[in-house]
Image (cartoon, rainbow, N blue to C red; front, side, top):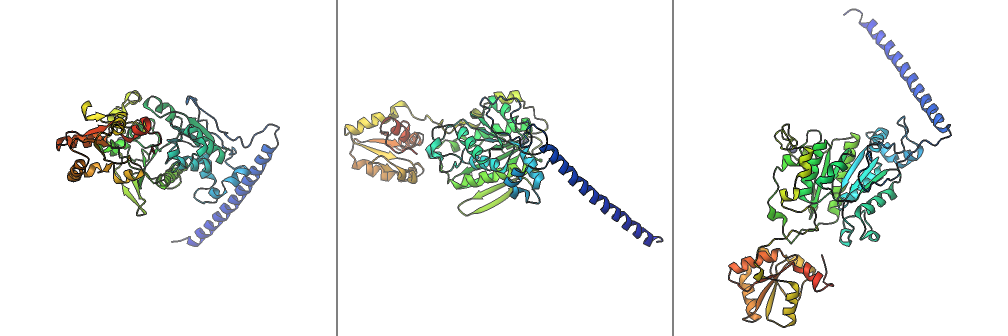
Length: 474
Ligand SMILES: [Zn+2]
């Protein structure tokens, strides 16, 4: 009760004193900054913006490639040289990002696995935004059919390494960052060595075995993993193994059935879709690197391009029983290096190695050269193309009948009619894109009594290679 008024006067006095001291501190800080900048300008040697100009690390064996904490133009006191202030001014103006965010970004190292549709915007934005060290790993070369979605590559680079193309593009945008080129496919035998050098990993690949491999590698090395995927008109995104979020194996302890991954009628992808997901991956990587915002941990973003809908669903946290990130995990780096991811998922690590099935006896198959002879000799036959209708519209061998594999069973009467029209002794020759679905079709046709059915080995891909080099490849 008593002394209330006196206490209030004392508070005011303390507040006045605090205000005065703070003002003095600001004044002192200002003078310190001024003196430091004068000191920096005074010595004979060149200091200041010692930018980490792009360094190559072709062998990916550089001991401290990215952990050397490139200063990237930052002064030791955390301030920015004038050119950097100008370059990143729109970042610095963001109250939540500011100098501190830019400084953290410039000290971070991020590995982008895959310089394709997802990796293109990831690498471009990370370079432009000023990440300290950007690693890019990919073993492929640029192809013309990449360019509609892999926007980091230009026509002039077709036939050259994707990593070289991507790294050049990044350096053209920002010569003050360090770009490290890893010219090889990421594999269990080299992944630990590469990933170890970086703070954050972005999975911008497109196949299942690599997805498992990168997740396992990040778990072993305790790295956050920004994972994206885009197929057709849909994409998804999440952050694994960070702030209690799960690893890929927590969500998918076993891979999906093989059949789902072995169709010749591969899905396409609309160019912008990986672009959207890749931009979001870059954003998540920047948030993790700077500690700004709330990364997409324990949540998954689902993007549907057709309906322009974005949904975010909650996913499970890391599983205590997970065989890889769980507390009782016994999975070691040695186990990782020996693990056969292609066998585990029953699918290849590269799209190039098209999966092939072998369902038919040799007597039920012909090569495309033999088929060409059959046509040239005028032997009666019916060519049945079992690709989806929209594939058939891209290019086809004329004349041929298109009945997609998925509809074959219900359209057997159509087939029968067409076969009769070509003559009683006609051979039924079945074709698809790569020679897998045609085998499935022939197997079905044999069961349904079309004993003469044969499949063309290697499909239209083989036709383009061995018979007609002008046939459009897709
Ligand atoms: Zn896990």
